[in-house]
Length: 332
Image (cartoon, rainbow, N blue to C red; front, side, top):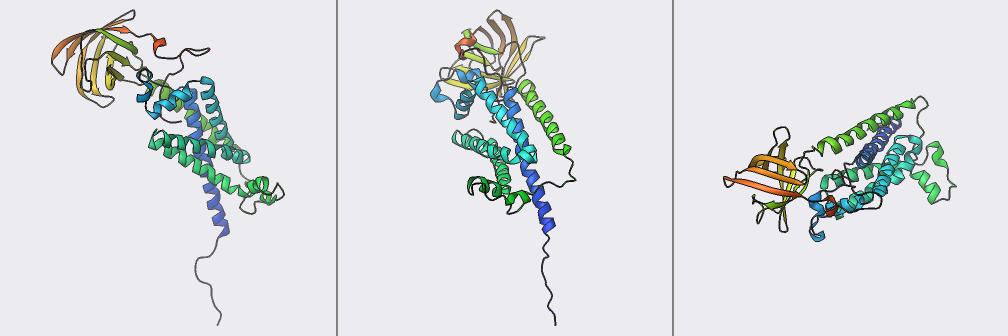
């Protein structure tokens, strides 16, 4: 009686195909992440800060804004990081340079994840960086024989050239070489246009009142402030965000302006609005702003006179440029 084998039959070709699919996925995920990060910096969606944050004492500023201010202080440094991220993304898109791209991506995205964790920037931002770093690490693992040959065996073991010992095998000869280039061009267009939109249309909805104003006459004390507002920030880099300061307390609100009718309205909660606090009209002159309307909390009429705060009092003047910070975003 002859015995028969039972169980699952090994399929080396099928396993190899699955490995190739995973390899492609782990290459292209960090490509998308890196291109998005890089173009966000170039178009001004990252490494920027709000006037109200610049006006706070250093000890009260959150880790997120400290990090943004540090990285955005020098435009040269920020653009160098952006170019490095875009360059590594392009390198990962092509098989011949995937190892080089992965070798730079792992420490870069890993460092971003550590920064996000250390400065309590954002959980979702940290997870994205970890996913990208993990995918790039898998690309390195697929090239482990090549790395061992270079760093451990002094380049004497070249078995990776034939796809042995776990090294990434060469692409099939029938593969169209324009496919990676086409996908890369599509990603470049998508990430750059998305970053441009976020910086110029999502983060910003310019109004005639954008800027920082000192209250010189009148009194308005909305919920959340210990006393009447002393300074008002209509944030240029956060659409619909107004920040009111009283003493050492800063409170965020939602505001909307209609330039055609010179009307202004203020709500309790940024973006979701909630309770409406103020409704009125404004008159804008050279460095002067007058708001006439009703305090909807107390039901009393109000007249506020405000004076513009010069930009130089909030933003540092750097060599060769005076304003650097345009928009804001949370991802590195």
